[in-house]
Length: 230
Ligand code: HEM
Image (cartoon, rainbow, N blue to C red; front, side, top):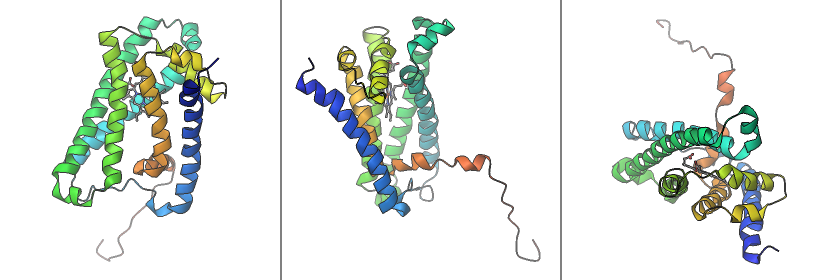
């Protein structure tokens, strides 16, 4: 028998968050197509943006790959390849820690830039600060597990709890027992991770879905000067 509070946290909340994510994205695209942008401020300040943005975005891509590897791919797949938990853990610990530290540092640079550069500060709104601080909180909560839990408590195979739980949500058969058996810091990060999806449609993070993939296969554009000299 699942307690009401657990039902609320681990069944109702995730599905509400994902519904807001899907409906919110459609609503935003329909209502605010011209606001669907990362709101670049590169024209105002370049140097800190280059470092902060590059560090954050590259590290974030590795973090996404790590999440897919540990959460969406079942342990049985690794077992079939003969990859033991200790081998997996070494990759996830070092890979995750390095990517996490770089992403957090990138976010700190981006936040410092908004606060220190007069022109960027003058054009920054609540949305800009909220997005950066929110990302920082989620990432630090992730690091509490990858670095914090591992160093203070020991290696933990989150694939057997968090992974199983997330996949059970996707299959609409939420496994509350498995997630409630996970350590608190892992549960906290999962709840914040779900909040990320509910909040995303209302922030500049929507630009994630405008990644310019067609650039990779579109034909080159040839620019020619119209002046006789050129
Ligand atoms: C429901 C969604 C999510 C789940 C279930 C989840 C799960 C996890 C787990 C289990 C870890 C620990 C990995 C380990 O101990 O080695 C982790 C780490 C981390 N997570 Fe998430 N996460 C979610 C969403 C997010 C989001 C949205 C972000 C960023 C915006 C994020 C950023 C991080 C970071 C920076 C780390 C530490 C570095 C790493 O190990 O990759 N997570 N996450």
